[in-house]
Length: 209
Image (tube, rainbow, N blue to C red; front, side, top):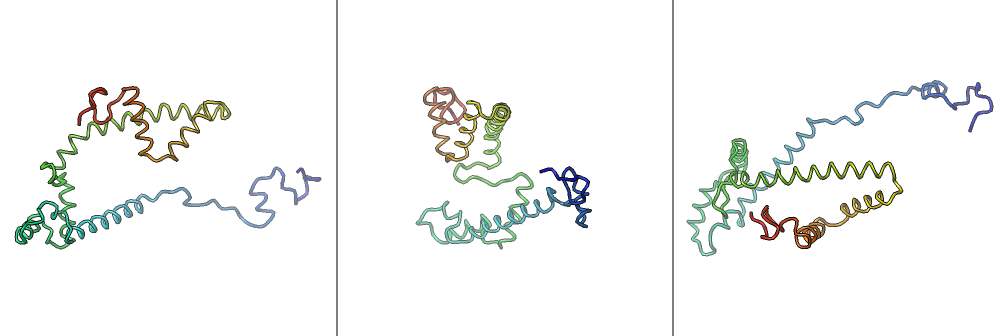
């Protein structure tokens, strides 16, 4: 409401924050540090969590059900089990195992897959092109359709397209990912046959790894 006498000192209509602060004898100070991101604290937290996870995995490897137990049969003699533990370095102290693992990762050595009998870095290299391809396509689709539909919803919030966009976005956030994945596979792979069910091959052939 407008004041009866805008010249009155008690009228604050149209006045800025400094005038109001001066009338009540207090100062308005800007907030410092709001919205500031402390990268050092973030990196320190990530390293702290990674250290605990790594030590936890190392500690798990020293338990009776460690990873090396899956490489031998139930009837394997105890001396062979002990030799395997020594070969894998599971008898070393946990800090030594963790430091050795970090040093190997820093050199690009991620160990060996005992199930496939290959180095993990070669397995990552084989699957990295498909991963980058998937990320690139998903990013382009999200930018093109996401920005376009978001702008359209902002310009015409009561239109049918805006309602459809909001429904799709809420469904994507609310529904479980495995349900959405199976539904998309049914639509684009089984019904339309545009994409393979798995892999990167032909839609009709079922794909390859």
